[in-house]
Image 1: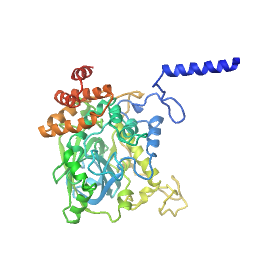
Image 2 (image 1 turned 180 degrees about the vertical axis):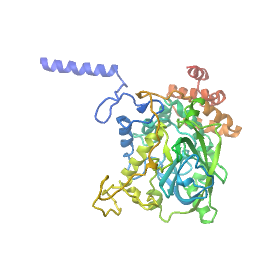
Image 3 (image 1 turned 30 degrees about the vertical axis):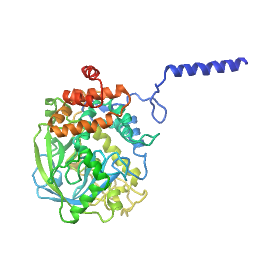
Image 4 (image 1 turned 90 degrees about the vertical axis):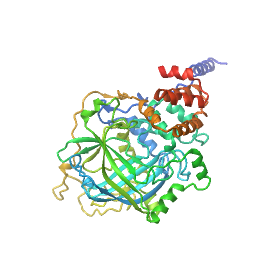
Length: 506
């Protein structure tokens, strides 16, 4: 062997040994190969400030994630849409200048109910959060309140959203949904404990679409005519009463009808039994935040103990004439806001404001808001032009602003609210995580039967996890939420309670 070949052979061997020493360790990079400094926390203007657009990792993850499927939605693929109307019943002009909340005003709405993780053709009985998205066609433009049937979420930062969904979706290798994968993820995300407790209870399998509540999940901001800001959470409360299914009941229905929830909704509307929901709000001032033992902008938390006020009622009364043109082409986004309502600094919501609109542009094109189901009921005046599917009425030679030849002016009353920003631009967790207490309160609020069902449902998936460390970390989360909860689920999956207690103490 010549000298050159010896050197090459030595180099390859040395490289192989180095790789072996670093087995399982791979540096995370962006698409351009640059290293990622923090893949857990968005780049924010201080702890309570907004997310900065310059966070390349956040933006790239959300952009790439939104383009992973065509033409089916990546999440919320299976949906049922219904037309209706919302009537405001309470004068809240002291909170918001939004015209949709003027007392006695009637606003047309379109609601899309959906399952989150599973595919378009999946049974509606599967355990899954249910999307509850409402498009208000207000006389100030469209406002989308995009929420779920459960009051909280798995994560608090949008930078983790693609990872979370990847873990819950089928394996890219086997194409099977696997508890080993998603509990591996959640074992690193202790704030998910609250949502997992909701999901594995019978609330994870609602009996139908009419008998479930809807939650905005996030905190938003209401702005009044003087510019004063109040933080708000929205909650649709069903007038039909809540009804859930046990896992056995869901399996029995699934064997006969994989569209039971859609059929129930359509049948009731066809017979004139129009379902109704009351819209309630909870409000906080910024000065209230420090009084709480959690961060009220954390999407994994409920505003427990904060009084609520009914502000209106929604009635669903018309089935779409064409499923694809309405339900499939309906495009919702938290970016669709109106004067008087704004996103809060909630890190998950801040990412959704970008990613939902970006995904709809990818899925339906840049002119998706010109489609009949998405078109505002008011005049749209902007200089956005061309693009696939453009059906606008641009006839002017002026397609820019400002101009002396055609004066398109801004509305000073529609400016964003003014808020002081302090602190360092940073990538850090929030200070008041408080990951477990509300999950414990939820567990203790369940009846004996509901607790039994929760343990049974959770053990069915967690018991399949092969990695002992992953399983016991998850068990320690539930133990920290409530000792009885943790003990019972540990016994159900034949875990080591002493190890659970040890992990919990850390």
